[in-house]
Amino acid sequence: MSLVLNVPHNPQDTITSLQRELHDRILRIRELEDELDKEKLRNRGVEVSAASLRNILTPLYNAIGGILGHIDAMDITATDGRSSEDDKVWESWKQKLGGKTAAAIDALRMHGPMTQAQLRIQLGCATRTVTNVVGALNKAALINKANGKIALKELYK
Image (cartoon, rainbow, N blue to C red; front, top):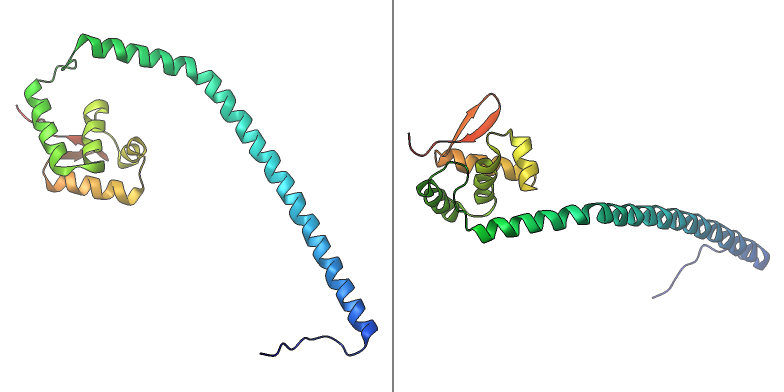
C-alpha cells in the first residue's frame, strides 16, 4: 500500500508546512488544556457542593433512619386507616404488575392523587415509562383520572 502525501517537493516548503502544522497542533493542545483546567475546576466545585450537601443532610438522614427504626420496632402494619385486607389486595396487584407499576401503586397509596409529572418524579423514570405505567393501571381498572390527576380506586365501599 502506498501513502501519498500532499507535501511540496521543495524541502524548505515541506519544513515550513510541517512547522505551521506543528504550531496549529500546539495551539489546539493549549486550548484543550485550558478546557480541561476549566472542567477540573467545575468538577471540584461540584465535589465541594456535594460534600457540603452530605454534611448538611447526614444528621437528617440519621434521624429519619432512627425514627423508621422505632416505627419498625412497633410492628405497626396499618397506620392510615386502611384495612389489612386492602393491603393484601394491593400487594397482590403489585405482584401481578411488578416493576414501576408496583412502585406507582405504592406512591399513589402514600401520596394520594398525582399528575403524571408528579408520578414520574416519584418513580424516577422517563415520561414514556410513566405513560406505560398509567396505561397498565388503567387497563387493570385500578385508577380514576380527574382534573389531570391519577388516583387509585377505592377497593371496597
